[in-house]
Amino acid sequence: MIPFTKMHGLGNDFIVIDRRGAPVPLDSARISAITDRRRGIGCDQLVLIDPPEQDGTAAYLRFHNTDGSESGACGNGTRCVAAALMAETGGNSVVVQTAGGMLSAEVRAHGLVAVDMGEARTGWRDIPLSEEADTLALPISEGPLSSPVAVSMGNPHCVFFVDDAETVDLARLGPTLEYNPLFPERTNVEVATVLAEDRIRLRVWERGAGITQACGTGACATAVAARRRGLAGNTVTVSLDGGDLSIEMRADGHIVMVGPVATSFTGAFAP
Image (cartoon, rainbow, N blue to C red; front, side, top):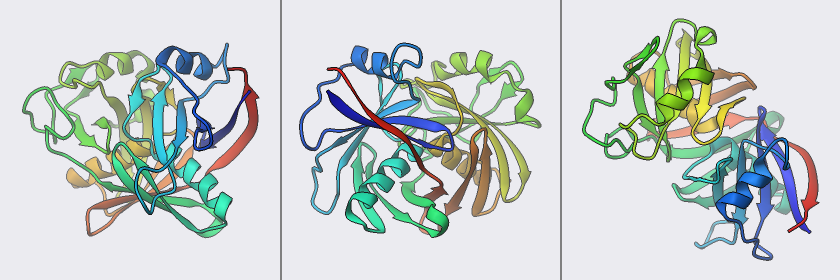
């Protein structure tokens, strides 16, 4: 049997499989079966904990969407696994490797977990886009949505600012926007309403997963996009369907995300 842990950050849920002790071969089809909410365990993303590849790090984290595709970054998934790794050692901080680089995390007051997601990238090649375009106002329109901001947090994001995020039919618009040809690697889609300089209401369509209760990299990307547009300050509370994340945009360009994590249950499944 293969052991796993089910965790979530604000309802953004993950199946976590630890492969540091023994290999667990997983292809796209098996990942899709495991993450299926009706026929499998069910989650937004699957996180694999692999042995570290660099000194000073606790593990190498790999993130997979429910369609089996691999994602370069996952903020809430990183916070969840970082919390588990810190609980193993009794420490208050940890450094992990991801495809997007090394990320540091720490425990804060009231059990909240913060992760330094590194610097946001806003150049068109860094997103990446299929051709040169103004990442502050992309030439994209779909229904009531237009002129989004593009941001990469290790994965691509397309942020639309709207008067009322609640009224946007994200279930209908999300799939089309995810596959917009301007994004060769597809994109996450955010619809955001700025409520104040320090508060944003956000709903997210995640690439390869669909609508989720929360998205850590999406919250980071939206805070960055709002600041680029002059709509927000350096610290923003982002209110998602599952709850609030605090996003701190530091003077050195690093983006720090702070929020709660939880373990739902543990179990094992047949190979």
